[in-house]
Length: 131
Image (cartoon, rainbow, N blue to C red):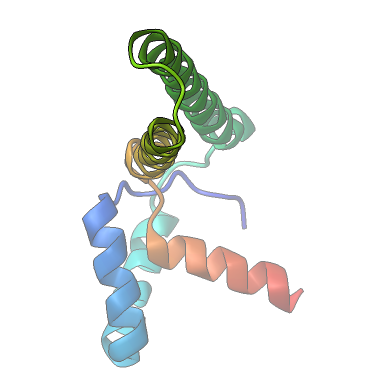
């Protein structure tokens, strides 16, 4: 079976499907059967489509990390010139820098919406591991 073009699923819907899969497997199995039937009618996905999502996410995350690093360097330089170097100032700047990097990582994960049906993804993973 060729890899099909997935049905878009929002981020919150994917989280909901994970919760349903854990706490109500029967309900999830019913949705999975419906999704498989829908998946058969969808067009085949191209190889380019599959890799573009990964590349886009990689460069998006890289840009966020570089931008947060640049902001940290600029703010650190300005603060050291205006306030002077002190242990408490350095500690505060380290905390602010860590928060910026963590926010960049969180934004990179939650920014682009997942467009893969969770049921189709889980089925594909299951087939790869059983083979």
